[in-house]
Image (cartoon, rainbow, N blue to C red):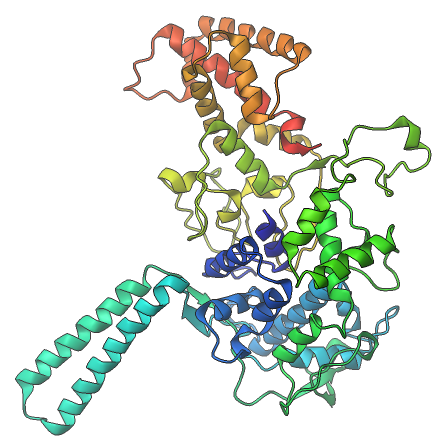
Length: 566
């Protein structure tokens, strides 16, 4: 779940964007994020590896994969497009994303002119631009690299060493014994086999996109009125003076590593505040600073400034441990309050900014999918791996420029967690967009929450929800229960984590009986609902019972409480 929140900010997707929106392999970066957060990697290290892992001394494969954060920019493969234009647009996106994610500032306002409200000049904007202006990868699929897991990197290195050795022996033989063709053929076969072993081993893993700096940095200029074709004064990498100074460096030219280290240094106070404010926002629906992506002069003041400062200090004091902050929040009396309305405070603080109670929050689209699959017992809880293709309606790609080959996954992959669903920017999975998943063209620091009739219709009729309801019903019928009441309590325990209340039980048992009578008089409707196979040997009575309980499970999965954190 927390990995998904970060991936929103990283604008993670499995496609390039723009009209062609071709596939790309970014899932190794997603898996790196999940692993880093699960392992409670210190947030300062988490920051440095994503912004400048390739610039560390002898970076590991994992540190290179981490730089995928800024490889999530869009790539335009449209014929006739200007590569330099889209290269500049991608660099601008990296500047704006870095400002929003770590500083909570609207840096983009200074792209065309000095910021109207915050002390950031246009010149300072392009000094930040210069940090990202000397990479080889913008608006292209290069460079890339094989993202083998850490425990298998040694084996891959050994295979590559054998290939290099076979290659060297073949070249030496050709120079020393040019007429010995039999030995040359034997050495060629040996080299070919070594190369084949490397390819077979690498095929198990993704070849993901990483950052790489140019050997010779580009010259950066201020863009007059934001136009990349109109160059103003030359600028060098630096940070806004109002936010503190860069640390001393022996490097002649500053690079992304200097920027990353500055973001998590004592010289720069915004990063810990912005970070803990977002954690608070995910727990309460609103940050201590409500404008969580704008800590500038136009943002809202914090409702609890001392608390914000204390949490930020605790983050740094705990060596940037995010799990420490999570623990502090969830163990607090404030978090553990009920979300029930309180008439005694409605006139004083109707929006509940002072947190006299908890807030009700509808969970995100991926979590809704996970809850449906978990309640029914279908969820595959494997961690990591390639993105999967759960079933979706026909015609999703009818109006995209390029038709997509949505290869519906089989077996356990069909029921993976929602965050592993393959994500096309131009046409995301309909279930996700119905519940407000953004398209990740740009960074998303906070998802919006809507409440529409389409959401209820989706929970009633989506193919995945129907499959889950059928399986949920079979699970209840197979349970060691003696009565409908006990089955209903089991259904609520599995989905709502509580017992069914008396008034709910009466309503649902009445509905169950109505469904039994309806399906008993119309067996074809039961067959259609259950999508019966020809080899299914269920009796008429069993058919009615399965269909009635499937209908009941559809109702339970469509309750507001099921998708809401109270």
